Image 1 (cartoon, rainbow, N blue to C red):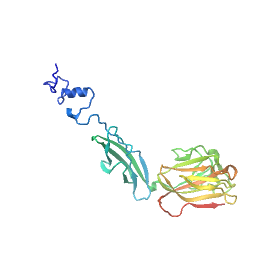
Image 2: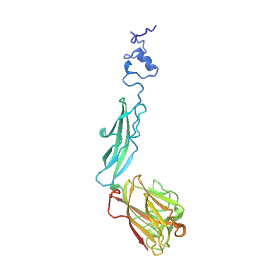
Image 3: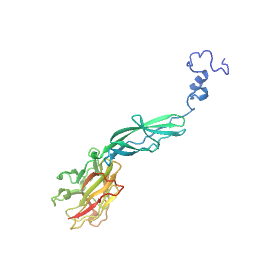
Image 4: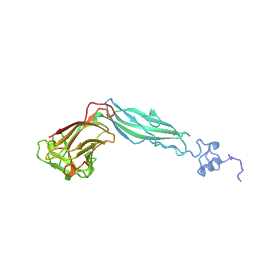
Length: 310
C-alpha cells in the first residue's frame, strides 16, 4: 500500500527517473508543469512571449553619406500571460538598439536584424527581419515614352505601349490602355507626337518600380494635332497639371518636380479633368524620373518649372 507522506520510496520500481520523486512523476504524468515547491524551475503555466520584428524593409541612402536612418518597430510583439520587459535588437549577435521603437543608422548593404524579447518570468523569443539599404546610384534615371505598339521609340527612352503593369517589365497601367495609345505623325519630335490618353470620366494609374527616395519628375501632356483638356496629372499625390492646352499652345511640360516615394513604386494618375474640350482628354506624352538628393521636407532650389509650348 502507498504510505501517505512518503515522497521518496526506497525503490522507484522502474517508472521514476533517478532525480525524480514519485510525486513529481505523477504530477508530470497528469500533464502539469512542475511548480517551484516540487523542484520546478519555472513559473507554473508561463507561456513564452512572441517576438515580432516587423516586415522586411528596403531603403535608399538618399543623401549618399553611406548610411540611412532606419525605424525599428516591435509593437506587434506580445505576451499572452504576462508582460514583455525587455526588447533587444541585434545584428550578428551584437546589440544595436533596445526598446520598442528605436531608430538606428545602417550602412548601405543587406542587414539581418534580430529582435529578442524577454517576459517578466525570464522566458524569451526571437524574430528576425531583413533591411536592405541601397545607394542612391542604384536608382537610375528612367525615361518612358507613351506610344502605340510598333511606333518608333525616341532615342534614350523606353516605350510604354499601354500594357498592364507586370513585375517582369517593372512598370505599366492598372488596366489595358493599348487602345488609347496614339501616334499623330505631325511633329518631328517623337516623344511629343505620341501619347496615351484618359478622358474626364475616368482616372487611370500608371506605376513604375523604383527604390524608395526622392525623385525629380519631368513630363509632358498634349496632342500635336489639337488642343485637349482639361489635362489632369497627379504624381505621388501631387496635382502637377490641371488645365487645358490651347490651339497655339499644344503642350504643357513640367520640369524637375520633386516627389518622394516610400512604397517602392512611383504612381502617376491621369484623367478625370473637366471637359473643356471634347471628352476632356489628358494626353500623356512622356515622363522622365531622375533620382534626387534633395530633401522633400526642407527648402530646395526652385523646381516644378512649367513650360507651355506650341
